Image (cartoon, rainbow, N blue to C red; front, side, top):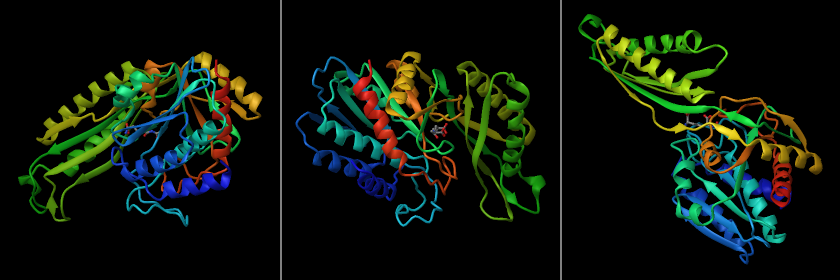
Length: 372
Ligand SMILES: CC(=O)N[C@@H](CCC[C@H](N)C(=O)O)C(=O)O
């Protein structure tokens, strides 16, 4: 597939971002394209809003899995693209439009040059939440077409086009979503002494929360707690009866995740006592760390040299990825693809350079044709 065709697909997908497990238009778009390819060696099966496509290899001794995520984020786009999101309040702000286009392009090339190994292309919903990788691993298709090795990529705004990056061992952190509701007693803004103000309770919680990382986690280890959203109250002169915090916890070690959660629970109990309210915690979706298998990262590094693509050793990142669940069961790796965007992941002006998709397809086909 040439760059022009990739640009067209990426831009069409960019206009229809959908949240986790609601990727209905996206699934239809992908299926339409996949069914337009020569079908001789393809088997296609849907799973919820995702898709499995199996390419029957010439020898078929081994199956290589490749996973792309397909969901968007609840962000209002602020780019000046002519192909802006048509779904209000939703945007492909994490590059999944790129990821899908790269996968379709790989598939087209595989139907032209049949691979030696079988290839299982996995179009996975809900990476941003609540997580599609874990349930997809339990799917029937995963049992009958189980890959022997699996890989995936993620765009990296801070790396130049033409560069890929990875490392053996831990690449991405353990993550857990965090939702906390505080319930108190509302009332007139002029009579605070008759109320239990949940805006004040939420504010105290957020301020104190950062002490968990600053003072309770070993500085040699690492953790992040971020509150990305606070809601509470109704109007300016009514004291809020309810407040809600939505955030995420990131840790390099699984044990540290347990420790941070215990500290959060203690802090919520302390807020309950201090502000005479009720605090309820829900950890939402948890993602297992992305742990790359050294032997495959090594093959990837060697392969990129052969393909004329710059390989850079990556640092560990506090991003999360439910692809970690796939790597927990199947050996393989994940890598960063340089896309040179002035705005980062999850930013309303994310603007990755489209030429990077050609680099990714070249890199991925090289892996598929050469992986041992
Ligand atoms: C690559 C990336 O940005 N992934 C997301 C995964 C979200 C996990 C979950 N919803 C959470 O917020 O904990 C990320 O935010 O790192």
